[in-house]
Image (tube, rainbow, N blue to C red; front, side):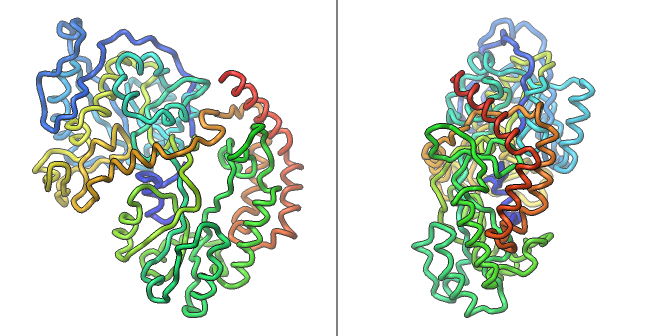
Length: 505
């Protein structure tokens, strides 16, 4: 079910989803007091740094590695960036982009070799934020946030910084974008209208059954659920890739359990198996390599995606027909959902204070973040309103806006609702925090068990959660294999860490 659109939502939106932070060197910032927090849309040359020492010092050159396909006009935009920031913070920046497929490996080499740089993109899915922070590759930002990064703290929902702490400290700055996860059932509205199907009462997987039955009778040649859908079970999962170790979202005692040995998991899997037997999913759903073409062909009724405000508009534009959705649950801030895109400062940076001043501008200065994200006005985009723009096709510049700074200061695309960013803020503010928000597991003492458990999961996960296997027969066998491969030991160790973490709160 993970279509290209969903990946972008996971990234934008978001796409997606959900880490790795590093317990790096702690440094006390003693530089200038921070960049201009003006949100003016026009460049200003008057916002010099408050530190008098900066006026006498030689300008600092920062090196910034970030993710994205390098555009042909990168140097031209970089030059404009430097013209703007030099009088503000007495620094320039060299923007270096590595393509999507290359970024992770190249950053491993750069970090491993000790190469000089100042700022780098990091995430739960690229340049592993949590792992790098734990091994000391990133600079501890707590003091810098209080001095050169005050504007960032004022802008970000507190859950962003809370959820990306490692051992109680911040080592990366999350992009100010969508904060929580909200999984939704996503529907092809053309099919809903064609067959007069009503989705107003849909909230759970079981609520889909009458719709699926009616659709299958009227469209026997189309599987209404076109691919394996991402389940939502009410648990917080602290160990990456192990969805059976979890804590109930409504926990009172903060105790971990085997999620796959709960009534909720069995009920979900029984429903999916019933759907599979009824022909509501493709026969080969467990082994599908790429089911994403259904979004292009329109031959589907319902799938599952992670949402954000006005996501239906994005999906509809991508599909070329109307797509609508209904939520499966209220917004929830998980560790992985707040760590989808961050910028970190190199633990060995010679200029951590200046790096933070530059990053602070990306959260507080609307002119700068729009310049970085969209390029030069009338060269790479045209304004269509005070806060809206259209990109100029083949202009030579493109940059992944989700990857840095304050997305809510950026121009809207023409046709976007005027209240889009206000809706994002309300969406973020509406989120409840998952019980383990801010907790990061240390896997050092259970590497072998984790590998064995992951192999056990992968042997059966797709077959179970696509509905292909009968859970009443197979789930007890899987749970026994998990126990045989060290589940109890891992649960005990993670529980010990959680108890220690909570004691320090």
